[in-house]
Length: 386
Ligand SMILES: Nc1ncnc2c1ncn2[C@@H]1O[C@H](COP(=O)(O)OP(=O)(O)OP(=O)(O)O)[C@@H](O)[C@H]1O
Image (tube, rainbow, N blue to C red):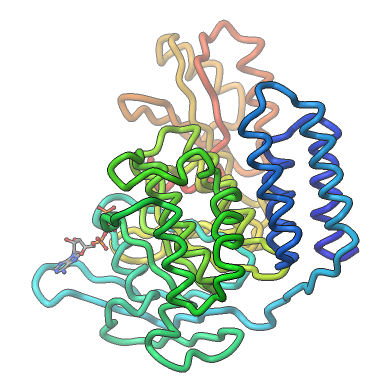
C-alpha cells in the first residue's frame, strides 16, 4: 500500500472515531499534497464553514469525508528521498574564548523524520543547529547536503535549508498580507498566491487570526506564523531552535503533532530538527533523539537506533508519599540495583530483564502511596537525571 493510501485510511479512521482534530489535520495535509488549486479552495471553504459553526460535528465529519473522497481520486506524486538530506561528519566547534567545545558530532538526517535535539542549557544545541544551517562555520569536519536539486545560490540554499531562531523578528501589516508577500517574492503567480496562502493559514490553525498584526498575536501564534512563512518556501531541511518555548502544554503538543505530520508529507517530506527542553513531548514525536552533554552526543533513542530494549536495564522515575524506607523495602523484593532520590523524585534502577509490569504489580499490591510512575529506560530523561 502506498503512503497516500495509508494516510487516506488513517484520516478516514479518525473520522469514524469522531477524532475530528487529527482527522482534519491529516485531511488538510493530503489536500496540500495534491497541489491542486481546486482542492485547496474546497479545503479553505471547509475551514471557513467550520470556523462559523458551533458544534455541528456530524455535518463537519460528513463534509470532511466528502473532501477525502475527492482527494482519493486525485493522483498524488509520492516522493522518496534516496539519500539523507544532510550528512555531518566529525563536526567540531569552539568559540576561541571560553572552554565550551562542540563535537565531534556525526549525524545523518533524512527527510520525513523528526529529530529532537535535547540537553541542558549551554550544552551546544543552538551551536549545532546553526552549523547545520550554515549560519555558523565549524572549525573542522564536513557537511554534505543532498537536496532534490542542488542549491544554485546562497538565496536558493536559504529556501531549502531554513533555520528558525529562538527569537523571531517583528513584522508589519496583517498576517495574511505578510504571507502573500513571501509568495510574491518567490514568483508565485497572483492567481495562485491568495489560494496557497489561505491554504497554509487553514492548515496551521491560523484562520481566526489571519487579519491580525504581529503585536496582536500570542507567542504561540507568532511561532505558527513563522512556520507558515517557512513552509510556503517548501524547505527540505528545517531547523527549529526551541519552538516550544513560551507555549502552554496543549499548544506544545498541537504544534509538535503538526510538525510531525508536515515532515511526513507524501509529496514534499521535510527533515526536521528541533531543539527543546521538553523531553517527553519531543520524544513522543521524534524518530530519533540526540542528547548533547558538554557539546557531545551521548546516546540516542527512538525507532532509528535499532537498540533492543530487552537488553537495557529498567529505569523508573516515580514520586511517592510514603517514607523512603517503605518504598525501598518494596522495591527490594524485585531485582533492584539502586534507588536514587534527587530531592524531587525517585529514580529506581533495576537489573536487565526486569519488566515494568512487574514493578507496577509489586507497587500496586503494596501500601506505597504512589503519586506517579514512568518507565524512562529509553528516554533521554534518565540522562538528565544521572
Ligand atoms: N558567540 C559565542 N561566543 C562565545 N561563546 C559562545 C557563543 N555562543 C555560544 N557560546 C557558548 O557556547 C556554549 C553553548 O551554547 P549554545 O547556545 O549552543 O547552547 P544551548 O544548548 O543551545 O543552550 P540553551 O539551552 O541555553 O539555549 C555556551 O557555553 C555558550 O556560552
